Image (tube, rainbow, N blue to C red):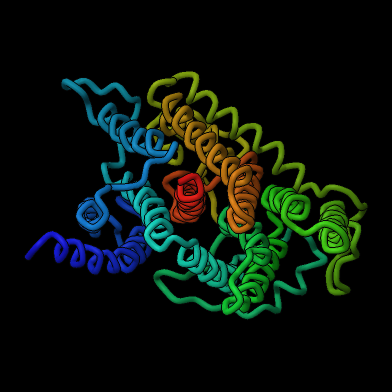
Length: 459
């Protein structure tokens, strides 16, 4: 077998990569080494061997194209994430028979999801480069948008945040497909929807080729599903972020003139409607008791006050353990909660559940990273966001219309989630965080494609 046959065989085997990654997304969805009674029927640690496919596909890519991955400003930070995560685990397990980190680790399996994330970034980036097109990466995001919208509308545990929309959520059909699809907390789903909703809104404006313009309509349908689920869930931080994202899309990629004025007017209508719901201006349905006064509800006020206590708990961890934090995803564990209690949450419990209840995260992504990985983790987190922002800016400045649409769509999705993460969090180790890595992969793919097109033009 000569070198050309080796390359053809490697390219053929690379078509298996998306199937393996889909399998990893599914199996890594479930917890690892999680204490009862919160355990799931599947432990993702049983599927840790799937991580071995990551270097295998990199080797195949090297044989086929002569590279492990394309060079971008991201690579230092993403490799650094794995290194810092591994070192964090070592400090908890003991270096030279000395435990440096304050709490025991939950194990090396906590790095499975970040490794999956890096594999997703490389796949989308290299697919765009190999195909010399963003079509396949964007089709994956379109399919995910539809799936996320349908799942969110059909499985969310709707809670009473705005009495005026309870009649809608109470009458909506529900479905489950266990163990993968069960009921979801609306705030958890809102974090994923914050990434996807502006992205799909932007894809409505992507310059699809003549034979693929139906994808514009499908993008619009996916956006409607996503926004409906987000709006009904009433995660205020996520909705605020998405409104800002939609405003950015209206100002930067919607054509000037009447289309832009219409888009801006639509964003203003959403703002007014959300403000009315937040201030309890709309009367509740006739079968519900009206609130005594309009204005911010007692539930909202209590939620904001509690967040300050949670943030203080996370900040105390960072101050006490600046190099290691408490350890990867240990914020919720009993030892950490005992040492850094949030009295208004840990011991102020509903009668239906009793105490103690699990405080899942720090309700702020930066503080969560600091509590998990210390200041080194914060530096890595900020670093890959700055690198991504740089790539998107380059695509906006130097790319064609398609690159500009992708740049703004990804940027607004990331912005929406950043706003969400100021008062809530999908942690780096969470099952939904793969959505973030897909957006990073889109940014990297468009950046690499833009550089190739620019090089071709220069030559």
